[in-house]
Image (cartoon, rainbow, N blue to C red; front, side, top):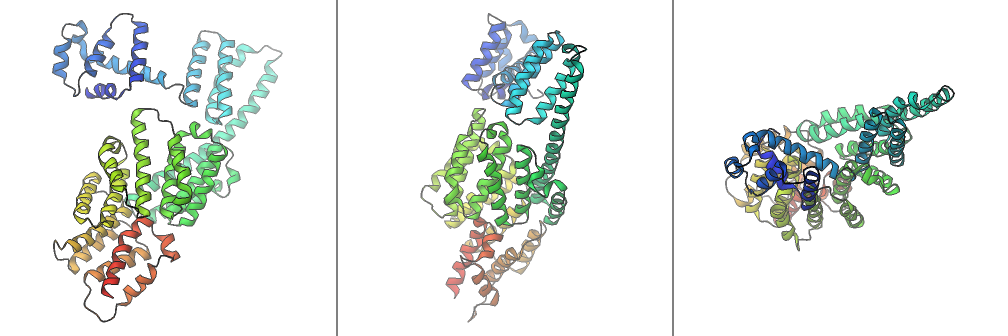
Length: 499
């Protein structure tokens, strides 16, 4: 705890149940009022942390002369209690607690008791396919063998143990290889795809997909390695804008979760991450009407660990509803959801990664754009720039800049000449190669901005008009639905007005 305000933040974040549990644990050791509860209550009473006021309030207590150390000990005590409070919320926590108990029993020389505790831990690990933890449990069992076996039983016990250990070790080895491949794919997808040339990402994904383990699903011998196998394929298809394959691998990925629903809690973070990706995939691909009710039920079934996480989950669900209405151009009630996201979920938004904040506010800007409320679009774009600190995700940045270009033109705040367009085009291209459809859309915007009065439309607009037909497959598979609407709606309107 480096910042004195950290203690204040963690105390103010505690729920009533967490505070009650903390005081029960502390008071069970210290029957009367003690330094921990006194300091806890004094800090909890402050809405804004003030060191001087705190010291004045506590000056009658001897520990106030060592306030820094007491605060540190209180902070550590809170973390200890929270670990205990949440120890039964996950299978990992349960096994971890049992391993700690077995270790204590081992050093107390209660070897048979230690073995019984390890058996309980192993039963949980086996039921939930936690092979890494099974290996860790067996490491503890290995230490017990010499103490529990005699000269008659030691040889068969070692033989059986080694057979089991080698099988688990191989499963763990394969699972770890998939974890390594997934980590590489995920980090490059989340960073290089957002901040660097797409060709770099293509090269990395090509290398990943050539790995022997990515050739077929049968190589994945555990549940976790199977869902990671499909997530890697999902990310690879997404990075190449092959949305038909994205849907296919997303469906395959989630069929595994549906077949083993108990695993959603065991591998909670993996499930939440894949659910988020899969949900947005369905929305952007136009499959939302059929699949989204089931996915929303999945979101609602996630049990949050804390009130902060509950707030983030609520924000996720409201964002899904917002995007659905945006895609379907169903604006009734969308203003209310906008207000919820920007005002009621303000704390939740601040706890999200910057890139995710940018995506949410970008789509709010799209909504204002569709409603032709251009003043709000400009304000939203400025907010995006502030959040991102000048480092927007490039595939979002392209559309933000194009939207800004159109809005500036519509508002006629200033003349846009060829130099401005050339500068913006260079700026967009500096963030990565644009596809053929993006190039056509950008070209069409430039043409429309400087469109002379012609008797017949230029060829670029005729091609664009054909491209933007709603049943055209190319646009469906090569441009995200919401992004396409930014240009599609505006350009088609211009074409209809001029010709």
